[in-house]
Image (cartoon, rainbow, N blue to C red; front, side, top):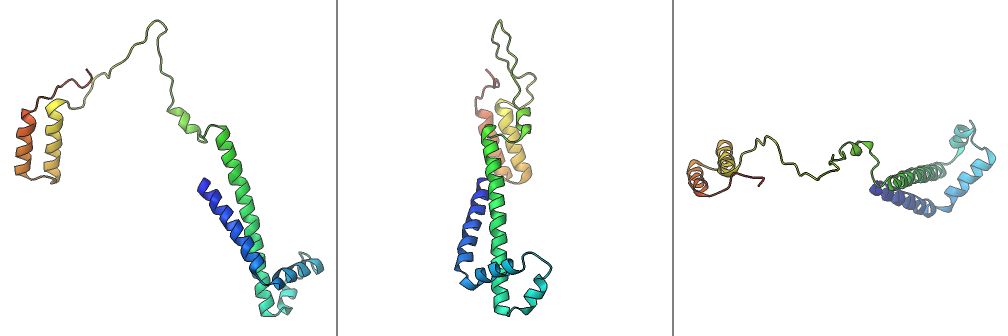
Length: 163
C-alpha cells in the first residue's frame, strides 16, 4: 500500500512539473477558453477553429490537469486506508483473527500437551525414507544410496522425538 502511495505522489509531482514546463500559452489558452465558453457543447466548434499547435498544447494541459486530479484522489484514498490500517493495529483483514484462537488452560493447573498419535517417521526410519525418495527421483544413484544407507543404519538416533 505504501508503494502505491509513493507512486501516486511521484505521478502528482511529475505531472505538476510537466504542466508548468509547458509553454505559457497552453495554460493561458485553457483559462481563456473556460472563461469565454465554460464547459459547454461549443467545445467542438472552438477546437475546430484553433490552430493545430495551440490545440495540441491545450489537450496536453487538460491531460496533465486530469492526471493531477486523479493522483490527488488516489493519494487521499490510500492515505485514508493507511490511517485505518494503523488504527486497527495493522490488520485490515478480518480473516487474520480466525487463526488466533485462545488456548484453553485449566484454572487449577497448567498442563503442557504433547502431540497425540504422531505419524511422522522418527530416528533412522526418517533418514532412510528420505534417501529412498532421493533414489526414486534420481537425485542420487544406487552407489550413493547404498553408502548413505549403511551410514544411517550405523547411527544411534533416538526414536523419541518429543522427549
